[in-house]
Every structure is written in structure tokens, then in C-alpha cells.
Length: 489
Ligand code: MV4
Image (cartoon, rainbow, N blue to C red; front, side):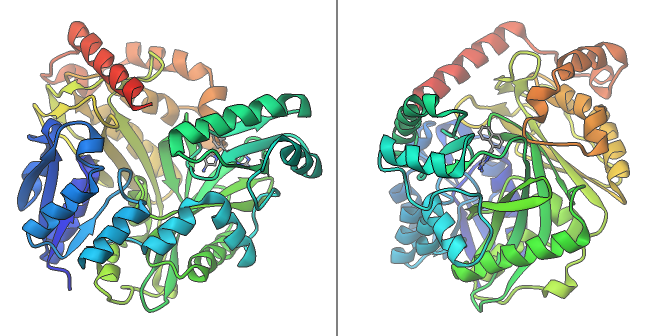
């Protein structure tokens, strides 16, 4: 069994992993950048070591520095969380070389799943339904034109080195293809270092449904049902839920079986997610996320299974803690990502110092947070403050609980997107479960709804002592965050 784990991440996910360690009697080691010296995860760990300056490239992405800290502190495993190095095959193979267990799939699987067109090809071999499209990258304009002609417009150009939606370009007509191809290849080159793009038929307004899978080193693979992640904005998911309102138990069993076959086919090990697009009753494989995801708690809430503990068990060589027939989906769970961003000002990031803090509690509430009173949300990373997850006997109760929890949630000193979530929880289409990936863009009334809700009734935020947002400080923090994100691109 693993005895000591270095957590190569920050924020709420670092705390989440350390909680699993604490319950399992495993020692935890944090590595922190200069911006995170006083962060919650740095304090929570049994041991904490500075890793480098604020810039992620010199801290949370610095493979040799992280491995060095793991060796110095006598860790036998590294948990990468999500983002940063979580799906980096070089990092996994560096761990393999050093005899440190990487808590995640092998570097071979990470390399295969990271090449999106190769993953598509592999899944087709396994008999998994994929979106109509090409299994090779377009060599140039002429080949792209032929492929597009064959599958029919609209098409979508996708970077083979990417995933998650960044750099994807929709092309409606042949006239637009040449320029779009040029553009997509340029973006793919600058963001992922590989200019290659591949072509798929574009499905309009699909729903994003993903299956959680767990696979152990003995070849056992199970699924924990699905999450629906259709409420997203510019490839950032904001609300996720489980189960999806569109799946019957038959379809869930069928898609779940296909997801486990996909994982089994590539000899996947660890926790992973198989993403599908769902459109007009049909589903198509999109990509595999070879990590624990931000939204994993909604699955934990409806299954009772601790996904991070399962990851650690799997990496220790133990068999899965349960069989497929023992997995029961009970009730309904919803997650709202609480970000330091201003939903009334194009969601600009609003990092800064927390001044007034009271998370919600009571029945059915879970808050996975990386902050505490007087802590700081640095401008250098993703501005997520916490994840608010609720469970209810059914979806309606979950929505009522989420409204109540959002009423209770006090975060002073920085702006948050709580108001956005309150508006969605009252939105008719959301309540009906009528979702698609263009929900936020198409529900233009959300802006007015937010203003109306803000002026309507009191929340605990307005009644409890908490510093209101300092306009000057916010402006400075926004400028810092924007300068940082420009630098990054
Ligand atoms: C698509 C698609 C439509 N048709 N693929 C976005 C996340 C990534 N995992 C896959 N994504 C999509 N793939 C086909 N064949 C629509 C999306 C998509 C999207 C694409 C471009 C811009 C914004 C988007 C928002 C949600 C989903």
C-alpha cells in the first residue's frame, strides 16, 4: 500500500486529495508556489515544500522540481489532480523511471488519449460509435475539402493535440473552409504545439454527457453512471449534474457498457471519463479524460463511492472496491462551480482577498473549497473558489437545496458568480432539464434575471458582517488577472 503521497496540484483539488489520504492513513505532501504560501492546501498537508515562483511553468508544471521534492520527502506516489501535469505522458514516464507511482493511467495510455485523432481511431477499432468524420488529420486544403464534401457541411475542425474544445472551429460552407483551416491550424500550433487538425461532422446543439469509469490493474472495469455538463461557457463548465434527465436506465446501461469497453480496449488503469455528445437520441464518442475531473463529486454524491480513494487503491495494485452490480445511482446531485468572476461583466476574473466567509451547510450539502477567511485568490491561476455540490432525493429537491445553499453562501471581499447560479436555478429551461451546450449563449435573459435577483430580496451575504467589494482593489486584481492570461497565451 502507498504510504506517502505528493500532491502535484493546488487549490480545492489538492485539499480533496489530501482528505482521501487522511482517511486512508496516508501521509500527504504539498508543493506550493510563492503565490500559495498561505493557501489552505499548503496548511492542510502533513508537510509542505516550496516549489518555485508563481508562474505555473516554474512551479506546478516543473516536472524535475516536483520529482525532486517527492524524492527528498520520501513519497512513494504522486497524485496530479486535474489540469497542470495530470495528463502529461512525460510526467507519468518520469515518475515511472524514478520508481514513484503516478496515480493515474500509464504514460502509454496518456499518450494515446492525448492524441485525439488516434483515440478516435482506436475507439472505432473497439466498435465504439464515433461522430462521422476522418480518422486522419487533414494533410492540406485539398484533402480537407474532399473529407468535408464526403461528410457534408457543417463540419468542425479539431486540433488533434488538444481537447476540451479549445481551438475548435465550425465551418458552415466550402467557401469558408480554406481560411478556417488556416486559422484552426495556427491556433492548434500556438496552443498545443502541433498544427494538425482533424475533421468531424458538426452536431448542432448537442448535450455533453460523460461516463465515469474505474479500471483496476487486474482488468476489472466498471462505470459509475453519467454526468451531464451542458451548462458551459467558452469551454468552462459551470454546472454539472448526475443523473442526466435524458437517459433512460436502458440507455444508461448501454452507454455505460460502451464506456467500460472503451477503457478495457486500451487497458486503461485508474479513474477516467469517457465523453459523449448526445444529439437527437444518438450518442457519439468524443474523447477520454484521463484524470479525476473537477465535477467528480456529483458522481460521488449519487453513488457513495469515493473516486479519489479508488484511484489510490488502484495505484496501490488493489482490486476495485466494488463490482458493477453493487453500483446504485441514488437520487440526484448538482454542482455549481463558484468562481471569482463577475457574471455581470462578461465573467472577467476577480481575484483578491477573502473578507467574510460562511459556506452553506445543512442536509445534502457538500462544499469542496480551497479557501478560508482572509485567504487570497491569486491572479495567476484558474479563479475557482470552490465547488458547491448538493444532493436530493430527486432533481427537484436538489434544485431547491441548491437555491437554499446559494442563499446561505457568504463570500466577501471578492466578486463571485453566485448570482449567475441563482439565476440558472430559477431558469425555466434549466428546471425542465432542457439543456444544451449553447444554453448560456442562448438564454440572454439570464443577465436581466441576475439584475432582478440582485435587487430582489436579502441573502445572508447582505445580513452577516462581511466586507463589500472594494472597487479599486477589484480593478487592480482584474488588471493583474487579465495581464496574466494574456501572458499565458
Ligand atoms: C463537437 C461539437 C459538435 N460536433 N463535435 C467541445 C468540448 C469538446 N470535448 C468537444 N466539443 C464539441 N465537439 C462535433 N462533432 C460541439 C462541441 C462543443 C463546442 C464546440 C465549439 C465551440 C463551443 C462548444 C461548446 C460545447 C460543445
